Image (cartoon, each protein chain N blue to C red):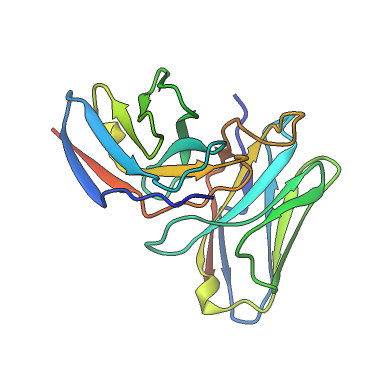
Length: 109
Length: 117
């Protein structure tokens, strides 16, 4: 599975959009991009995943570049409860995930 | 909605002892995954089972073994415990599509915190 690179930490003002980048320059054509988050030692929580097209659900939007070498997770209106570590994961089958170091997002009141 | 259940939630063991962690997947989910998360570390994939057969293997030590039973619950058996085994152990479950790949999300349990003294 391809490796991912994320900034170690980010801050976001409450109510503003949080844009979390991820680089996956070695991604292959049949690998999906998944995003999970982990709030303080709880079990990781699924956010969204995609292959080529941009995706949106009730939690977030996923923007994947045309060459698929990077993506951005967008939390449209960040709240204090969105403070967590966000993991970008690339996986072919979704059967095993290799978590990178993630981005620690802090939402500031 | 029912979630993944893990037991026990906390476990304290001495070095060289054995431990068994249990995982009950979401009803109708047929795949179980085990992850280990050391203090300040990211979750590390250990092993997974699909329909009671081992499907993928990650960085699971030889001292550990796991299986999935007929009711789809899974157990992670850990022997000759070492101090470095102290960690959060997460179980996740998902429903595998007929193509053999799980493109759906993995649902994680609350974890078992193992402390080895």
